[in-house]
Length: 216
Image 1 (cartoon, helix red, strand yellow):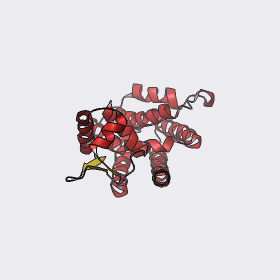
Image 2 (spheres, rainbow, N blue to C red):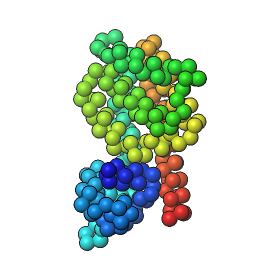
Image 3 (cartoon, rainbow, N blue to C red):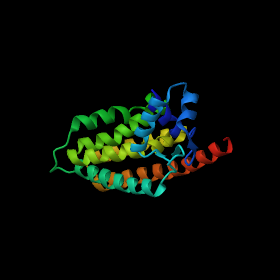
Image 4 (cartoon, one colour):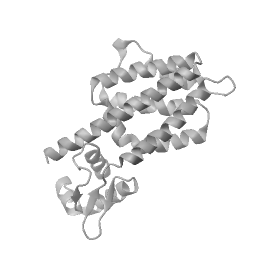
């Protein structure tokens, strides 16, 4: 599918932020007509990845780090509130969802996945499941929107094995704090986990853009 390919090209820095291109260039490279290319580009435009230039083709939008910082701030508020709810005795929560998370993240070290793509998907699911388990559907809906918007750079956090190991360890600590209803500890652990990921992603993104430009 043309849309999926172009989105991967943006995510993998084959289409570099700031680059200009035409529909014809993409059509020739992908071996398809302009119609599916145009449809894919308009979809990516709606999602904030590219913009159309008046009589001059298209451009990959530069990374708006200020926007991503704001989205991470919102994510932090939502998830720490969810963890607080999960540790409360007065809130009805979904224990089955927490058990599902425990089966993955509290598994023995020997059973941990080393598949980068798999762990990235599980990481996103971990945070979304915490939101769902906390029992506020509207908060979970807003969180899903934030998750979709930061996905393109967040996945870069799983390009190194050390970050995969750290994610397992940090998720396990957060889950144990929730299991024992240690609200303050769980929120501190979660906040540190998100801040570390945010910092790593920013550094990797800047580095990847630099490498892509060097090889352009």
